[in-house]
Structure formats: C-alpha cells, structure tokens
Image 1 (tube, rainbow, N blue to C red):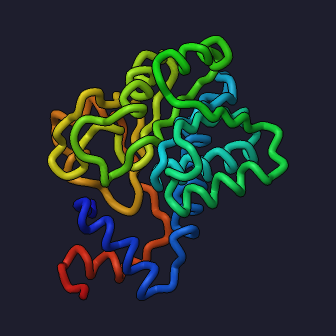
Image 2: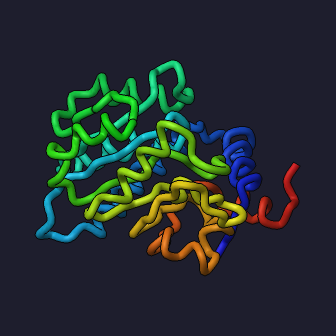
Length: 233
C-alpha cells in the first residue's frame, strides 16, 4: 500500500498541475465523483437515500460539494451544510459552490449557517432521516485541535446514529502522527485520496478511521512513484 505524508500529498497536487497539466479543479471533481460512487456501492438497499454533507472552507469542503452533485445524480436527497462565508472559501471550493448554486439540481438543499451547536440543533428534526453523514470539514493540512465552527460540527456529527464517512481523513486526526485533536470525528468509513496517510494506519487510529478506502483520482502512477522515491524536483 502506498503511503503519503502531508508534505508529499501537497507535492502530488502541485506536480500533477505543473508537470502533467491536470487542473486542481479536475482533481477535486474526480475526488468528489469517486467518493459519491463509493458511498453508493456501500449503501444498503433498504436504507433511505438521504445524505448530509458538512463542508469546510478549504479544499476538503470543495470535495464535499462535488460529492453532493454526483450523489444527487445517483438519486440521493442531499443536504449540504456550509458554515463559512464566501470570502473565506478556497478558490476551488468557491468555484464548486457557484457551480452547485447555479445548477438545476432539485435534490440538493444548501444550508448556509455557522455550524454552532445551537444552529445545528435547529436542523436535527429535518435531518433525522438521513442515512449517511459526510465529514468534509478538515483535510490533511489540519493540525491540532479543530477551531470553531468546525469543533461544534464534529461533536454534532459524532452524536448522530447514522453512518459516518470522512473524506480524506477524519477531522481532528493528524494525518502524519495520528495524534487526535479535541474533538475528533469517529468515522465508520474513511475515503482517502491517492494513497493512505501514516496517521490513518496506526492501531490507535482504527476506532476513528473505521474501514479505510483509498480512492484513485487520476494521479499518474509515475508521478506517485517518483514522489515516494524522493526523486522529484
């Protein structure tokens, strides 16, 4: 199994764009699309086709927005919760938010609210029927304790009886060291991109990671091999 550190993961994205001409938006599109397909494969036929996705301001949140579009195309009802104003969003996440809001996808409901405990509690009744909750809050760049409003969102997610999926890494878990911030998401499934991360594989991380899936997002194997061998410049 290939394993990438935080630094190597950043390098993968940078060199895919610089040396292979793969735009960052294409990488995000493939991450979100393949995540939607995998969730659909794991979905139990008798369960409601209702998914809640909590999106952060960085590219992990953008992956979640793309995932929402593709889940809707797979006939899921999707509720997206975005807790940050437009000005705080990464460039690619903002682009995917615009695409989502301008598209005619009646199966997606977008909730724009700060993810405080009080605000999320107001959505409980509306979202109680959801089968899946997706953590697209914090990605591999995150270190230390999650800050507001992500901290309340993680606590809220951990209280849900539905199935929980983390995109790339459970929010609050350090992808290199496996150290856990307070709070830290407890996932049933983790969909990580390109390769596993060291922190996902530690025995102490297993109750937080759940079942680990590595998703191919179209990174050329020769690029991945070069980064793993330390032969890039």
